[in-house]
Image (spheres, rainbow, N blue to C red):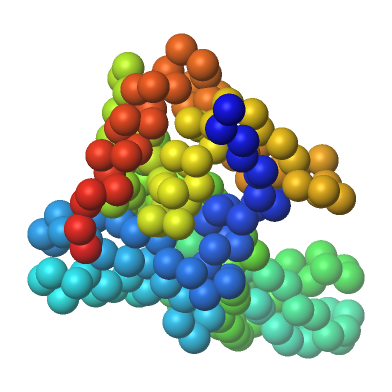
Length: 202
């Protein structure tokens, strides 16, 4: 009997992988070859090992209108989210204290993304790139974010007995595996497909 002890929750989560200095394996936008997404100086970047194309996450900005109200003479700092107004040096904003409309200077500052959305339909959502370790079983995507994740999936899905690690929280890494990949009727096909992906080079 093949026994497998599961791993900690979120170990292969997109956000946590990148914050632990790991990489996500993806297909290059330019040539379709092997590229990786990693974190560099608090920003996500991607680079292809074949054609040397690369890119970086677009920075997020916050815009604040600051000034002293012409009516109540109180200081205000109001966030401006309307994209039609943010390209300008100033904007008309209501004073949060008295409601008077003021013309105020706009101040821009870079903000950091609080989270990274998970993989959807075999693609990551920052650059919209397809995962490198990706195939289909019965019309559904079978994927892994990197080679370590691929090895984990093969070991977990092919196991006859799966156990939680001692003193583990309620969730384990297997909670993030789509149900159809864990389904017993798909097991043989999913393992065969994942094993085939192991032979991809890059």
